[in-house]
Length: 571
Image (cartoon, rainbow, N blue to C red; front, side, top):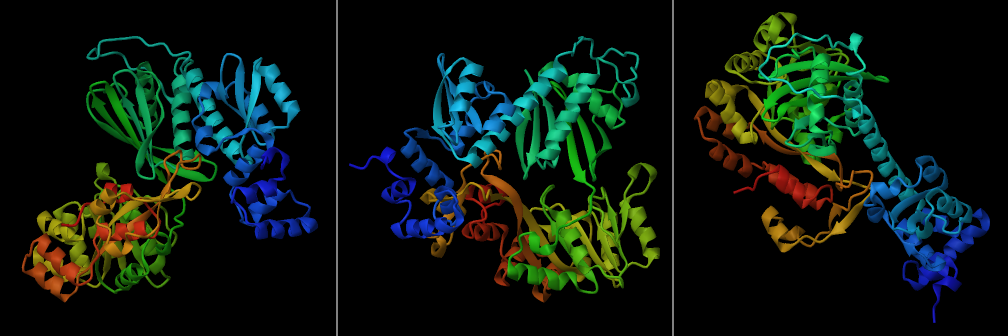
């Protein structure tokens, strides 16, 4: 009878079917020259995964194996039984406790010195479970960062005192400027700083501070989806709001009307522009902060997610001498990033490129960028009229939002200039009808447009926890996966520390590219509706956003859930 506790690790792996005899012999042969541990050698040779090795090692040692998912789900109160420095030094993390025992995940269950120390620290009997070195490291980072954060929030709030007052009562203004922060205000300063630090660390684009009936919900938008990071008590909402208003130079006494402001964060060599919006709600003022990294732009067209055919079409039109290229989509769909990448590709010493933006999101060398300032009269319209006298070759207009901006943009494109801009529309055909709806005559729209591209951003599967997935028949039908792809291998993320248990990390673009060729141009002149334009464009080879999403799904880049979340069904 096979007893793993009396066998070598290689024999256990072969017995379990994880490793072939030939692979084991190869590894043993190499071990003679390298003197590495067999387990690490097998991993480096790609013959097995960390989980396979942990399972075999646990069988050999007579302990239970534990993996990422269970480690991450451990209760923070149990984890806190061991100090962070001890856990990090000894590669051990507590995952469960009872009245008399503590379950500790360790890479080396024979580390008797560590086990003895744990029993002295906790006054509990240690039950060891086996985990991989990297899994323990990830769990330690995940849990102790949240324990530290929780402690900092509690510390920041410990000295807060709240005094209820009449909302409509006019009181005397209090000087709460950053130069004169009193002991009472200091906890709120620390709490706001903590929120900003956590948001920046998590690669967030937005921070939402939302007063609810019993707490304040702090959520950050990571890869396009909001995730909760902390929940201060409702009593902290007034102090949080006041601190953000001070930073944004807003009126701290006004709590009944919406306000907009901005401030800048400098951290290391990064400068982040923060756009602030304050909106009164029934439980207090909700704050949304948009984080814009003002550093140099390092994206190019090849990294945006274009398929080979798509990028060739796009490049052909952005190198034309005149005409308009319009990118459409909702807020946060990556329109500005695509435009910046386009300018970066076509800029040269021989061209004068000028942009008019609100706000300037990235700084590009060799390009003249103008920041719109409505309060002093520096609007899109007034700036564009001045740029006519600046001898431009290529012009980027941040957004076409009214008839005046649209009219000037189109006249630019009809007088020998290449114009890039964005429009808020659902897809490429509706972008054309949107321009006409703004007030631009169809003959001008048809004459000026070269290309219209709608885009969305879909989350990509986390590479650390990517796993094969068999979709249900319902999912295949809902997404309308073509028959030839239904037997493909699909993937999803299991959830790990790297992706905050979401299964996703990073985003990529999907695109609907409408080339304004002669048949489409003729339909625009005749004021055809968007459905007629869509049908004609599809007949000429345009792929819809849903079709572009299905392609990413088939390639194993994203998931069924993301396609359904980001695109609408083609009817």
